[in-house]
Length: 255
Image (cartoon, rainbow, N blue to C red; front, side):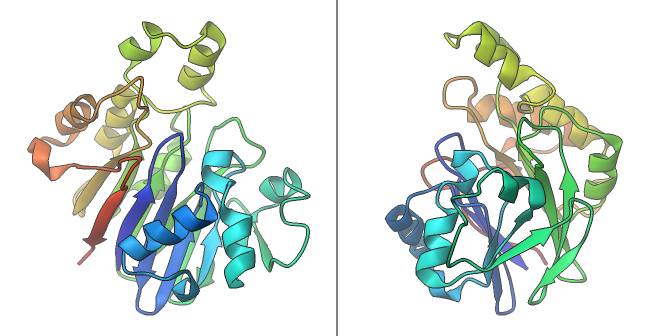
C-alpha cells in the first residue's frame, strides 16, 4: 500500500491511496484541470481512479469532487449529512454511495473505516485505510481529539496528522477575533501542540511514516510543526514529512 498528497491546506486538499489496482482519492478541493495536473504529477490519470471519498462539505475538500467525478464517471462515497448539505452539487450524473460514520466499507482491495470528528460541518468524518495487513490513518479538520479517534488511530503503520496552526501565531496574527475563535475552537483545527498530544497518546510501535498536514500559511511554519511532533515521538526532524499546499507530498510506501 502506498499514499501521496496532491496538496494540503486551506486552498485545497486531496490524498491518494493505492493498493494493487485500487486507487482511491480522499477529497478533492482543486479545480478540474488543476486536479488532473496534480494527479498526473503522481503518474496517475483520473480514469485510473476507483472512486472518491469525501470527509466533509467545506470547499477546500469538496470543491472539485463533483466535476472530477462527472467528467470521468467516478463513484463518490460520503456521509448522509455531507450529501444533504450539498443537494445541488450531486444532483445528477454521479453515482453516489452514502456511508455511515462508523461503518467500514470496501473499494476494490482497500478496506476503509470512517470515524466521526468534531468539526464545523454537517456530518464530518476522517478515514483509516487498510489493505488487510497495513493501516494508514488520516486525521485533519478536527478541533479536538476524542477517545474514539485515538482508539481508531492506535497502532497505524502511517499517519497523516493535522498541524494547522501555532497558537501564538494565530492569536497574535491579523485574523479577526471571530475567526481566531473558530480556528482554535473545538470544532476548528488542531494546533501543533494538540497534534503532538494526540500522537503522544497513540501506540506508535508500527509507525513507518508521519506526515504533518493542513498547515496554515499565515499561522504556522513547517519547522514549528515538525518540532512539536518530534517532541512527541523522539525522532530526528528529517523523519517527519510535510504536506504542502503547492505539491502535497510524493508517494510513500508502507511495507
